[in-house]
Length: 454
Image (tube, rainbow, N blue to C red; front, side):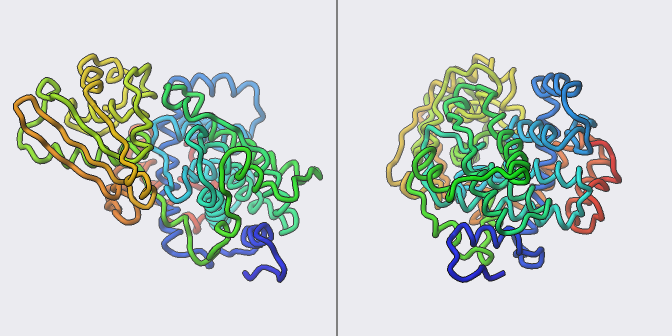
């Protein structure tokens, strides 16, 4: 796996993407990857049941080419580009998709829809699919970790294009020379989606991930057709156009030895990841009273946190999607409902006047010292002040589910089944999960769950 002498970081990435074998991938990374494949399949299937996604599928079906790639949750198949694009958007819809704080984003939903669709289309083995997914994720995550994110730019559809392209190219068998060219071309083909869209409840934001799926696969076609990219396509995109302070050597430091893939998280709450810190702290605070706190009992809720928690400050909630990107609303809904599940982030909840009134009682302050610790720590203090003078305090240091504060694997599996059973039923949901947990044993990815239309 040693790259050639006199190589630069792009040569190292290309060599890694073309020469790494499945046995070279750390066991911890593969174990996590299997878990996020199952998690992502469920998230995509649930998202594809949403009204907007069903309407989009209905419009797409008569206008796109047929194929072997599944649109999960619909029992429909089509060509890999369009299937992957639909699955990518759907996987973001309920904010249940995997993420990686070290990478400043969500590599899984950028890479897995394309890897899955292309593997199904080609009839690639489960082993080939698993390896392609690991390589695409790792390169995607490393690029994201090596630059400073701008708060104004949403990371979906940016460096994820490279991850989707690498996964597709590994399945297609590109050699190192063309893989380097592909990485440069894909890195030069991002979308500059704004982060304000998610705060505003604009569901267009979900299509940003679809750009990775579409352009990642198209990048491979362009290379096959003889198109070329810049000499270094990553640096200008990450240093000048979208992000800042790109550090090339950080991309390849300990490449193949340390796996960022093993450092991701699987969401346990259906909202933006920074809000999870505030939810963990709130749940700690509410657990200190044996009597459920009612909205009418609350004088105010004080939040002291890192910058991103405070950035998600909207209280004028326009739809269910917007609830997932409002720290005040999430805390108000969880307090009012006494739960933290999907029921806290619905259209009915978004319109609830009691919850909206409570959200306006949430006061947030950025603590610069907490921001300086992010993402290594996700520090947040929440105080619930009741009208009778009671004060309930909670604190988060590391969000539950991060590698330093891992969730129980049984809880992660329970999340999958809670989402998958209503869509596929007990038997099929179980078959999908079993196959994913041993996906490298499948002779063809078309054999997933016995070849069922998922």
